[in-house]
Length: 200
Image (spheres, rainbow, N blue to C red):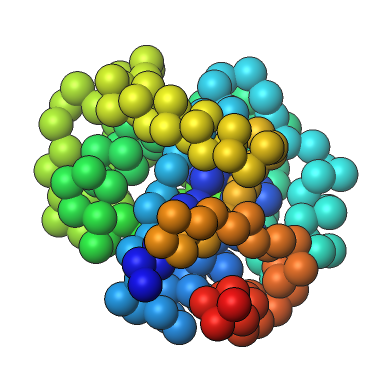
C-alpha cells in the first residue's frame, strides 16, 4: 500500500502553525511516510491577524505565540518569499523541508520575524546550510509556486473545500481528508486516527 500525507498550509497562517504540530507527530510516528508540504498563498501583503483569531488558536491548540509576534500581529502579512523558498526546498531537498518549515514558523510566530525580506531568512539558511537561488527572494510568486497552486486547486476539488490548513492522507488511489481540528490539543493522537484509516 502506498501512503502519503499532503499538508496544505500558509506559512503566515496561525492555524497552519498549530496544524504543523500534527504533521510533526505524523512524521515521528511514520518516519518513512512521505509528507508533501503545499504552500498556498493566502497572506499576500494585505491581511493581518486579529487578536480574536490568535486567542482562538491558543484556546483550541497547544501552541503559544511569542510577544514579539503578538506586538505586530495585526500588521499586513506577506508569505510570497516564504512560499517561493519552501517550494524550492520541497523540490530540491524534501527530507529537510519539514524541519525548515518548523524553523521558519518559530522565527515568525515566536520571534516576530516577518519573513518579508531576503535578510529575514539568513538565520534559517545558515542553520540548514542552504543556498537557494537569488531569484526565489522576489516579491512575486515563482513559477514553481504557481504550478503548486494548480495542484492544490485540484486537491481541493477532490476534497470539496478550499479551506486550509488541510491534512490529507493518500492511500493508493484514495484521498482522505483528516479532521485535524480534533487533534490540535493532543497532536500525538492523530497517529491513532491514521492507523485506523490504514487498517480500513
